[in-house]
Length: 137
Image (tube, rainbow, N blue to C red; front, side, top):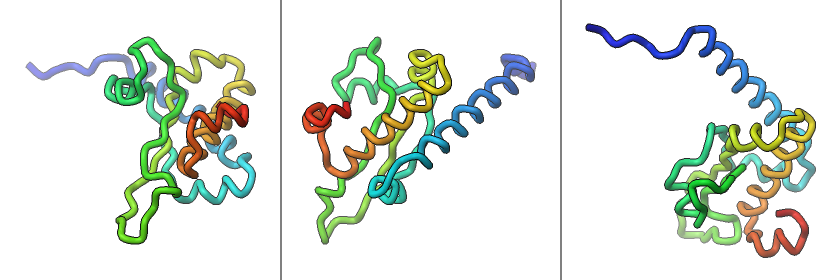
């Protein structure tokens, strides 16, 4: 017997529409990032995932019930070397934690913007301690 798909087509359509709306919000947030940070966005892929994996939480010393809005994975600019092959750099935004904590669309968009700036700062070589000092954590 063939396996039946789980979920209704209407539920799948709703989920796709919610993801598309979040991605449009991300596009607006990215467009609002000022120079010189905007130029650095060309060096990273910005992707959307529903939530962090257990490995991503563990690798960042977070418990399973901790919240993670975004994550930079790659080699910061400050660590580039002439003999290195540049590896892909990526900022992942985690949609479900952001949507859970920011129900108001304007607040969600602002938090997405701040999360991208925070993760982009890691790409530029700024660590969490310095971001705390700058009030940008």
